[in-house]
Length: 188
Image (cartoon, rainbow, N blue to C red; front, side, top):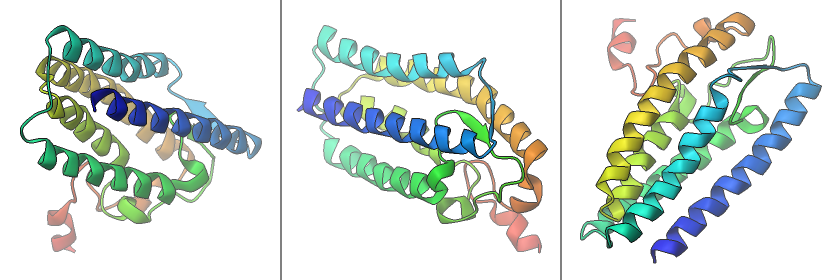
């Protein structure tokens, strides 16, 4: 069960990388610019190491499926639906890199109507849920911290690039980064 699950997620990630490369090529042909190249290798390393550590922890410490797996699997499947929704909402603008098309209309549909960074939230939930499904607490804790660290670099770099090349600030006046900003909506 464990290897089938990890294999399916790995297949999904490889498929996403193929889509990202196709989107990158299309965007660059349109005149898009890339930002954040300095932190991108660290981000790739963290996401790759996550699966290697998960496999190692499950095998070395003889971890098994959590007794709460039905709830965790349901949460995981929900995140996959949200992931597809977020990526489909961005369409050709979705990428694993920070690639911005100057003057492009900032996407504000799908989950982007509600929050600024739904895909980063989804990944953060996955980094918690996937290891919990197999009682891999070390992997969960370590990679949650590493994800926080890389996103503390990634998100400001992405938002800076968007502010410089698009109408990002005026498009996202009410959305919180990861949670709906209900208070600002009530003020207006």
